Length: 333
Image (tube, rainbow, N blue to C red; front, side):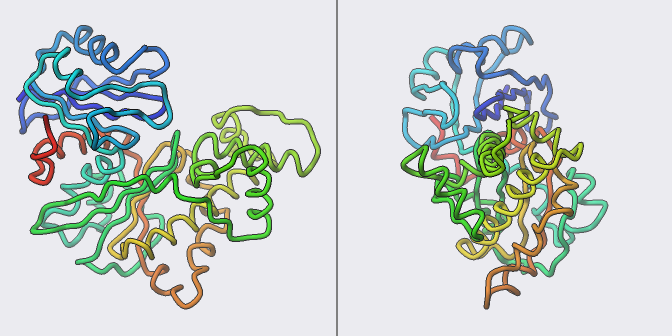
């Protein structure tokens, strides 16, 4: 098999290697996308550095990847699958959406298992139960989370096989739910013609919200990056904390909307580095109240369990699972 797996986002590219189906994913390495001209140079660097023999590729991509030409949504990389396969010289190449891969990374959590909310099971899969609930076992699963962009995917369990519904939910319209969020939308519309949800639910989204709050208070900005703002929020900086809580509450609306759209009543799994770092602010914000703000469908949304993932390598696991998943066999070159 000799499979190279990758989880490629807007900022980082994670690579790993699996010698055969039974082997653990090893040689895990994180690269900065900005340090490489294209995906081919990053892959060649990784293979040469680790002295690997690779026969197959399975790539998790942050962006649409059904066509031969693949352009990553939030960085400068693009490639043609057929050309990449020819240049690298391997047997097969599979590309799937990054949040489809995130979902497939939980294959062992759900396969032949009705006790997936057991404390020991959650710990094994690096999951935290953020919100308890009463799940519907034969329902769908929502996988979502902000990072460089906003990822959204739905999982269907059919004949004991997980099938991810791939999409670009992060690029749907931002849907404000309060007067303050309506003002945020107006502020953003002065800067861009179209405001997708990930302009407020992502790293740059946190920066946008922070700058919006700064402009309302007519004071000087102290921070310029999402990392700085997030760190300041955790330390108690007032405006940074308000920005982070506002983003988390907008995220609650996004989750609730997607539960209603996809019928995901088995559970929601939140992935991505931002939620894991801001975990305590979920409790301090109005996240749970906003989840329930769905009128007649309050109970429908409120009973869904919500899990928070801390596994940085789950996308690599999902890329590996996709390689063996019958649903994706016809997708590979």
